[in-house]
Image: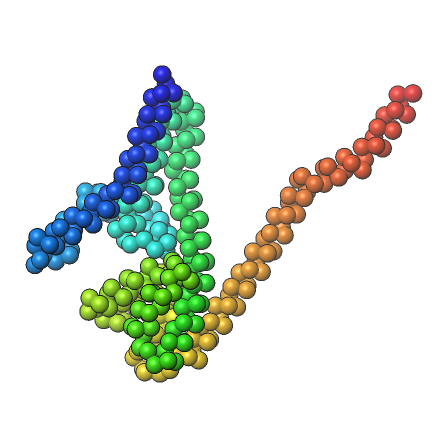
Length: 289
């Protein structure tokens, strides 16, 4: 009976998470489209948001939660999520799912295992989000190098910055899937009539994507001074490639240290047993006589 109740509660929890992550954004988008069709004079920020978005906004604005959200929100933003999506995912991943796991742990596993589940449920989602951010940061720095190459090629052909980024976002999506989300956001802001500097600031807002920030600074300087960017883009590419080589060397050195520990723990005892085993057996037989 307990196993049946636990299975039902787990299925309900998974179904609620699926509805919150998959269906709620679809319903929210559909409601916004219908609201714009009904009330064409209503601005986008006046359209009523979903209850989950409002709850996430109020929850992350609480003084006790704001510090934790600033770190996790930056990590979620670097994966390509909007601010609204980052709030919702933070609420569900860091508080909603751990709460369900903690209740199930204390209900079906007792106090000791329930406490362990509570600690794991609180720490594991944050660890996963940080790992996702590190992976996205590395991928987007590499994609930004390709962005520099393509921008230099298109601007040398006579295209403007806006047309270059619009063409790159449309044609180079398989090459830079993560960075294309930021390029789409830049193109939407330009189509909405935003200033180029503001759109470029939004493109390079995250400080952890160093190559993209250097690219944005160069584009802003070029738009203000009207100078050529080919030589400067080459310098950005060379610095990025040098930083990537240094990072690969550091990762290689870490792998060597990890392999040394693995050899000491697993291989050396087996080697000592293989070499010294016959000698120990011979000594034991001699002493037994």
